[in-house]
Amino acid sequence: MTSTPSSSEILAHRSDFGLRLSNSMAKYGPLCVGIDPHRKILADWGYNVDAEGAELFSVRMLQAASGRAAAVKFQTPMYERYGSKGFAALERVLYAARQMGIITIVDCLHGGLSTTISAIADAYFKPGAPLLADAITLLPYYGARSLGSLINEAMDNGRGVFVASLTSNPEGASLQTAIRQSGEYEGKTVSFGIASTVQKFNQGIEGMGSAGLIIGATIGQWMNDSGIDPSKFTGPILSPGYGWQGAEAKDLSTVFKGTKGNVLVTVSRFIASHGPNISALAQATEAISLDVRQALMEATSMPSDEKTTGAAAGAAVAPTAGAAPQAASSPAPAPASAKPRGGRLLVLTGPAGVGKGTVETALRKKHPEIWLSVSATTRAPRPGEVNGVNYWFMDDQEFAKKEQAGEFLETATVHGMARYGTPLKPVQDHLAHNVPTILEIDLQGARRVKERASELGLEVVSVFIAPPSFDELVRRLTGRGTETPEQRARRLETAKVELAAEGEFDVTITNDDVERAAQELWSIIAKEYGIGE
Image 1 (tube, rainbow, N blue to C red):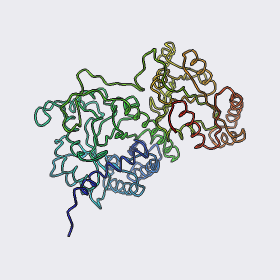
Image 2: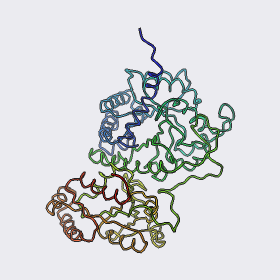
Image 3: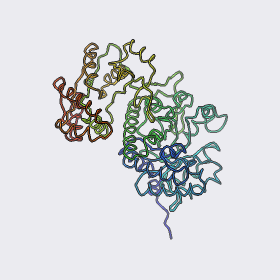
Image 4: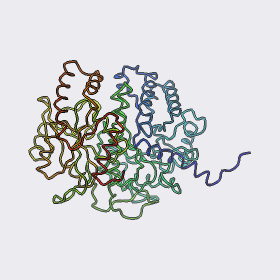
């Protein structure tokens, strides 16, 4: 004889997915690794374009995501194309993810009449389900209420859902922002009604709920038209479109301003483009995770627009007439006459091979609130590079125009070909808002920054990262194994010149231990910006 669960037990089940995902995001950041075994990627990796290749690819991506991302998302059609063998492969990789303790989302986008889609619970949610997942994605266009019984089945089993509301595909705007002609949300947009209906499933849940929305990262241009305010939604928000699909850091800051740490950003092809080498995949995952975390931290610090009243359950609130989105890659600028309130710009330099990037990455893992300046360049993007994340990519004409207008802190021509520069305004804006700001640059660039900063009245603290000894620097350079003997010889000669310039810098940090060096660097930042350690 089974006993009826108490109301507190029911609530614990219904809040379980949201709690687990929230904890994972707090630990690993707001990144969801998309596992999409496209045929081209399988071929590029040297794998068979079949179910076996898709499974091998998926396992490798799981290894890269483990301990570096809050969740993974499997694109069902990429397995379905191989029929029963594809579904069997998906079953096995879902099992592998469970054994690794990774939260799984199956992007199946199911929808339909409530009498038919209830069967989906047997496949994905119930104990012993063949495709047991932590959450799935749903389409609400049979009516958002048609999903109600399935959402309840998911939550009653400690699982979650993500319901498509505002998607990144351009043609979706006309449907999603169409005005409803009848019903509870008459006069509101279709997407508003969806968001408000989904929010009702999160009522009574403390913290992040288990019923989520899908809101694309590229929909900023019609965000206000939808009437949805993501900052008022208490469930998780899954956001595709970052990177290869066109969304940049500024889009995350625009679309999700004022949110409370409940946005999960999906990145797939940027990471996969670094495979199949596990180390390269892991490094790409860590790098994009830091960038996504920084962009969303800026979004959470931005107040949402003032809204009118009348939203159901406080899920989605229409913007005040005439309100405009704040599309910016950095905080709103201070008045031209205002001097930075916070600390000085931290310029980080050191010889090649000393581990500047490694120290900076270790620092940002522990302190994602630090902003790292992104350089502009005229060279073409390499495979997997994302505009606004790796560099700001522009042509020679645009670069020259910006340089002439004084929009760079410093510029340089590298190898007589591509031009590089440090955009000035983002640096000034972040400093004006007391955001710890780092510029990682070579010796010549550091000298140019000091000279130009003096002209601009910009205060700088320069930090030199030094090796424990010259012999250790030689070992690190030769240990890379990525350069010819001639290239290494040139590097070492340059390193000698760079080491001789150590006295030009305000502070020297010896990188004999990465974590210790990162902590020493943080101590400098904390002192500069008045942050308690």
